Image (tube, rainbow over the protein chains, first blue to last red):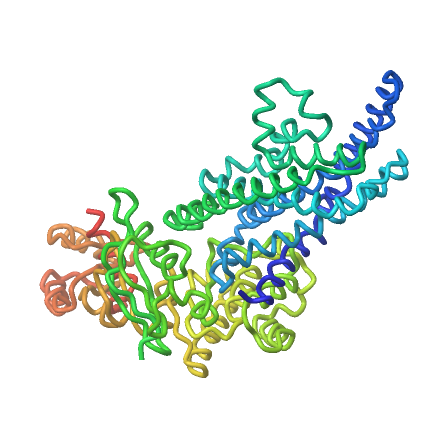
Length: 261
Length: 304
């Protein structure tokens, strides 16, 4: 593994940002939209629920933390699509760049962009609703790390699907994470879901984080087993998604990388 | 010394065999032409040589090292330029060369980019994005990228396609100079046969996934023994055409010029027959067979 190749790959995607303002706007547009929509909605409902000061805090914190999942998963498949659309993928992989280095570059970009979006959303929630996401204290760090891990395996899975089935799967890059959002308990507790949906929730590592987040906001503490379980599930899904991604790469190499064009 | 050795390379897609058990070597400093009609298996072969397609069977060795095992080490010394792949359209020329340079272990990247930009006449285009460039300028950029890492082996797929004649000539001269100075070996595909004859030391002809010829361009051209004779016939045109039809010669006519294809050994007999028939003509030119004739003959035979 060579640092200069990871740096070169990151440069390639930084240059894309420089020329495509929509990509930069992406980091700010969705947080603004979500925070306005859900923040105002929750403030409105708060009026009808007695003693529900936690409502806005819980929903706005959920939205802010969900950004880490979304950003974590978005970067890898989008970078792949960027190089497919530009017919540049072959140029990247006829160089000594390895798939591992390319993935690491994309993950670093995902972390950086995720942190920018997260910081921006945190700042905005404070300005708009006086909600301080950082009141989650030391728990914020494992929450962010575990949600990023979730974003990564979702991203690996989507990337594998694009490699396996081609560009007709490209819409998954910006939609797949949202399929999991209702089961991830971002805005409501597990009890709010119907029994079948609860079962799906229980096998998702993200649901334990958002349940934990609400626990910290209301009691100031958390059942550590939730973090452990989320970590184990994340590891399991990371292993499965990486295996699937490897198989998808092998399949596309059997057909030839230009098949993706 | 061989820098690339291909042994029994095969690529199969289901029951279709795209590349069928081909073996060849590329020597240091050699420019090897890879020719064949569309769908012959050239691009598939090149993709396997670059590691962006896994072979069904066979071995590829660069610098006496097995390719998949030493991929990163090998690709540091190999590069590629093609018409079917692009650099990112929304990046500037400078940005493309900059990020590409970091994908290779190049000492003093700035100096290298500066030098390569001068060679390929890109200095005044550095701030332009690729979608603002002409096709020829994009081809020059692709070539500049291909030479960034001082490659020992270069795979060039139609490197002069869409270039103006003077730039194409500059590129050919540059390729020959690089070979002369640094012993760069190249695999070269082109549909411009005159260019292949000028640049390539050896040509491999692929058809239906198989190598059907491996020789110098001159020897390949000679192998078909076909000459073109052009005559200017101001008066006896009809008589000549009747004679040619009767003796089943392949010919074309334009503005009283008749172009006849025939084997070299038949030329003397042909002219004595014209004299016997009292067919008068002015201006005679005899063209020896070219690589293009070989290409046409082989592809027509295969089509039939």
